[in-house]
Image 1 (tube, rainbow, N blue to C red):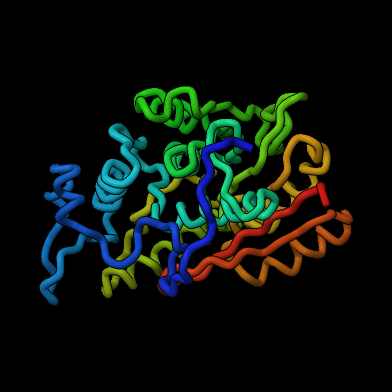
Image 2 (tube, one colour):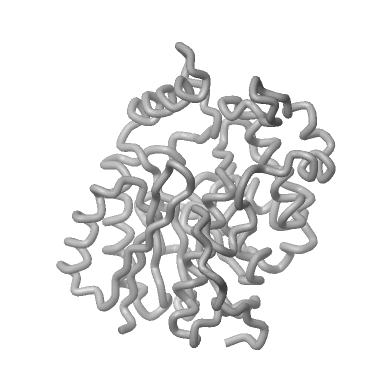
Length: 310
């Protein structure tokens, strides 16, 4: 393991985010506007006298992400093509910290840091968010894969245009949309962990319908158009059979790469999907499996992790 390590030992934190998450409490809008002056145009004072943004507006959310990445992670260049997914950064970094804790379990409770820790992000997206956060928080190196050429081009630009990310992130195109690891993991390549934020929905209709409901709640109005505040292309949002089908396919294919990776992980948006996933683990006699719960405010999420090394 690398010499430069971060201790896991800390006081119990009752806040909803992971104790090492930098985004506890409310956003510091003054600091964000100072870090990214152009962000100021999206900030306004609401009826309660608090500064905020319109979270139902894609451009506002995108500007918030740019400001967060610049202020907290020293990322000077971050951009995504129109219509692509603009992820909620506080929740995404919780996933990174959860995986760090997972790796610490076999390292005497110390989170391993440095570029010898290699991670693979399945479906890196145009935003390249997990490689950014893993590299800046812990110094890990990443391979990110995606089936979409536009996402690959965008992620490569982010990785190359930021000095702090150079030589830490390798973006690869997955030419076969039915595969997860094949064509990406090289024969002698080894990863300490994989990441995946699978498409949540089973169809484009389901994706649009759920987003419209979300926007109506944000606006407290009667929206008729399904404009996405978070964006997202079809391949980012839905998959035939939904996230369960996606994750099951990933679990089955991971057997072929049991010696290439210590921990395979994936987010699971719906708790009711866990039962089917764990039935697959039992069926395939996978040595070690875990569910890690994460909670951010009103939203509960979780990740599953599995390993062929007992």
